[in-house]
Length: 185
Image 1: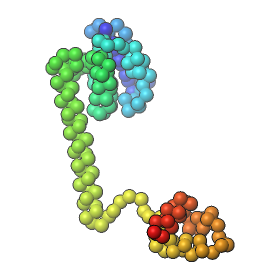
Image 2 (image 1 turned 180 degrees about the horizontal axis):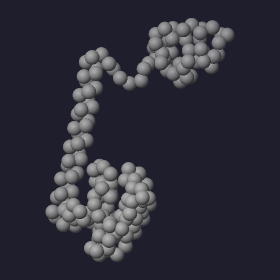
Image 3 (image 1 turned 90 degrees about the vertical axis):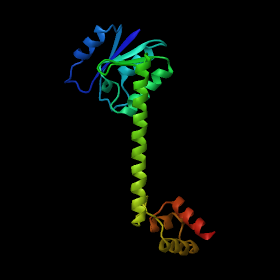
Image 4 (image 1 turned 180 degrees about the vertical axis):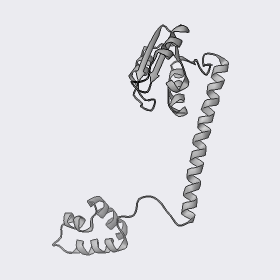
């Protein structure tokens, strides 16, 4: 069974073009959403996936109707593939029920993985370059040696409670204990 899915991003846009194309190729049921492709919760898509059974094929007018990013698109298609449901995109002429369509989609998946690896490499290179210039990154230390010494002195004074010491130094109880215990070893 062919099940169609049509989506537009705003109320101002019209679903007619997509619905006409889906009906023309023989979709027996069509689910719709008026929601941004970025939003993870799209009730029409969820209903379509819930309705579909093994051997059915999800049909969209264009790939970007199913997901905004390649990563999101691949996640959805992999999810339906695990359930033995096919996928077709009319404009890109992709049909994962055929060997050629599966190949094209695997190439898309490989490109997405390549893109993630490139981003990861650039991030690590940027971090290494920053470290080489003396920038460490991360959160700044809350307790320096001066604060630790002050906390220890205050802890020796029985007139100050732990709560008072934390307020004076400006740290949480857990931070105080962590630094006092770690420096007393």
